[in-house]
Image (tube, rainbow, N blue to C red; front, side, top):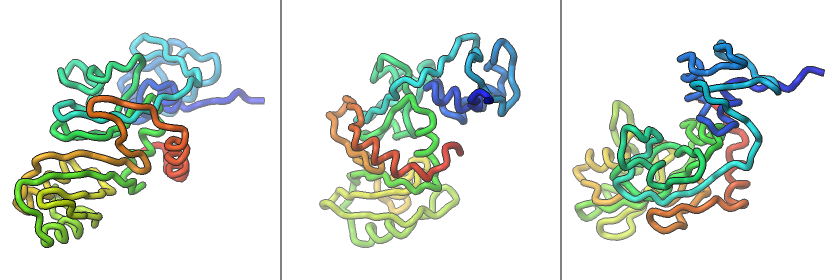
Amino acid sequence: MEPMTTRLNKYLSEAGYCSRRAADKLIDEGRVTINGVVPEMGTKVIPGDEVKVDGKTILNDAKKRIYIAFNKPAGIVCTTDRGVEKDNIIDYINYPSRIFPIGRLDKDSEGLILLTDDGDIVNKILRASNNHEKEYIVTVDKPISQTFVQRMSSGIPILDTITKQCEVQKLSTFEFKIILTQGLNRQIRRMCEYLNYEVQSLKRTRIMNIHLKSELGSYRDLTDLELSTLNETLKDSKKSI
């Protein structure tokens, strides 16, 4: 009977070291070794192999995965590069083990962002083709008209494309809710700017079935129900981009 094997990028992802995409980059740069040898892309790991990144041994011990929901304040940057940004999300949370954010939330925005050590779920959620919903509450600088709501929901030309149709609901004179299924760079702010509105505040309140329930600047573990529902939603998603 042949031993069970795991592709190297999946091994690093399941070990909580990084996403598969990031693992592929590390492998391509020659920073990963298996038993002291720099492997080719696509090489598989078998039980007993010693995998190292930059000389540090990486263990894939099937530990309990970490899934947290963080209420990010404005001013915090969603990067794991702690040497680049002083106000980065990793230093701010100061979690006792290695985690990384799933996607991004603009520095000027606040609200829900998920963090984990599970590289596979990162790739599943980030796949644009999966059309996962994200909900935001936005305050703008001028009274919201019905024309604004209609145009925002039907598609706005930004970044050399037309935004997908989406749900937009006026909540008050200056506040609206929007549900997106795509994540273009600074999408909501650009959409508003196109219609001559300026965003005053932007808060993400939901990602798929996960709702914002923690105080600003704090985080919580996902519940078993949230996690099982999330995994059920993702079960048909491809793991890598």
